[in-house]
Image (cartoon, rainbow, N blue to C red; front, side, top):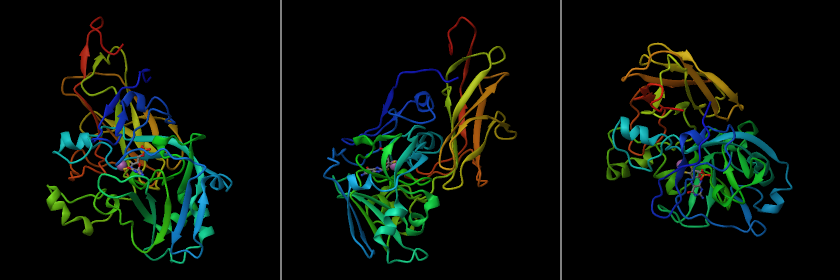
Length: 379
Ligand SMILES: Nc1nc2c(c(=O)[nH]1)N[C@H]1C(S)=C(S)[C@@H](COP(=O)(O)O)O[C@H]1N2
Ligand SMILES: [Mo]
């Protein structure tokens, strides 16, 4: 059982922008994340009057559309349970296990799981009638011009047109989170939600959707959120690589242990079973996660954990594992997830990249301290 806790925030703000994540116990307290969720911003949070806000659909389309937000609410609505995860989630583990990286020190909490509702992007694109062929390399770019960002004059990202037009991919122009209007922090009055894809493309405070031949030219599509090769060790070296590398789209299969924390004091699991719990995420469109396993012998053998709740293809799963047995000073528990598409976490270490993105080594729990009854511990 996950203990009830009051929220404690890890604050990773870079100067002004709000960047923070909930503590791991709070993160997995609920299957559907509500208000205790991470914030990731590259600039200030705008406060928008929804009655005045217009979403423009343009670029290579037969019909340019100016869609007022109240009109978006009258179109057919679609709901999807989907995780939203920053590409830099788990960067702290990469920094501590591998070597120094450049970016916000996210622990395991730059992820949330919610029911998003709004209009399918494919519905709106059909109205605009794209003139580009989705089988070619064409893209749909999402832009927010409300404020300048740290690295560009606006915020933007893009996905391939083929994905945008596929209703099965459930790419959503989102108006609500868990049945309620988005809050200003979540992108009110309208944001993108792109199930399976890195959070960086989920543009908040959305102003414009553009069908175009190239990817978004925004800095966060072109000069960030890419997996740099390991030989790139400085920002200066990175400059010569960005244009050669693909932008991150799908997030990898992943799992982490949230409770207890590494280094925690626990009662002897020979006397009282130790409850290990966490979340797991599928890779891209290959969800749901179908198996989470635990190893106590460095990955030689694995035992199934129990998946507590499953929410479909794009959702996270929450899981737990009850351990009865000895815990010694050097005992380490690992976890790994496998999704419906057969993708499985494979590595205990490795995957270092300068920006610390796309990290999915096994989840790990170490340094547990067994305390005798009456000495305190995980009461
Ligand atoms: N307009 C705008 N949209 C944005 C961002 C931003 O800085 N500005 N950050 C992106 C990134 S990197 C992530 S991970 C998600 C975070 O969404 P959240 O703040 O709702 O958690 O929003 C994305 N959309
Ligand atoms: Mo992100």
